[in-house]
Image (cartoon, rainbow, N blue to C red):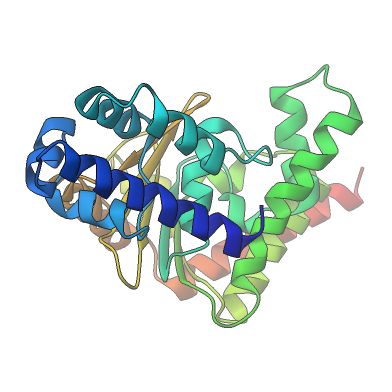
Length: 277
């Protein structure tokens, strides 16, 4: 679905929500309270500023007794076969964000991955999958990185745990290329990069990835991912806590200059290892 027609469809979704809410005699605040979001969020859904999470659409159907209308239309609009179901909504928001802050404890963030690195991850998770199944997923992930290449692009800040540099995904040659790619983006000032060293010890949300996204005309959102699952967090109090956690990552991380030097050193180690085999 083209972007313009998709946006028009979301505007229809919002118009229908407003119409059926008013038919039920509910204010935005009243409906928001009944589906566990703020009235302001209901207003943003109605204006097609923000897309609802699936569980919210389901609760709206229950409150307004709309026989699954909002769930069905939301599934159709957000369904993007390029991405897993749990990530599709986050991918939609990614394209709208003016600022993205990523923390990854074990792997390079998706927006920074090279094709060979992504392929190695995909094969590790699907060791029996044929190439024709793996290759489109690799292209889709790499294509997402286009948002960092051309202006206007979101301000992008990544904090990588040192473990990301030490786990040899795909082997030495793949890791050397991947870390050199990340370093090049930092040198070109397309991203701001920090490494959280092993020496920093315990840190917030141990073992969890975390993403913060900010928007021009909507409140910030957080996204965290687990095993074949992901969750968008848009409750203001929860988002505030995730922002505080990210501040702690940045405070404990190496400086951007020291981080770049460490990444370049790790890339060189992998390159020497690859050339000696």
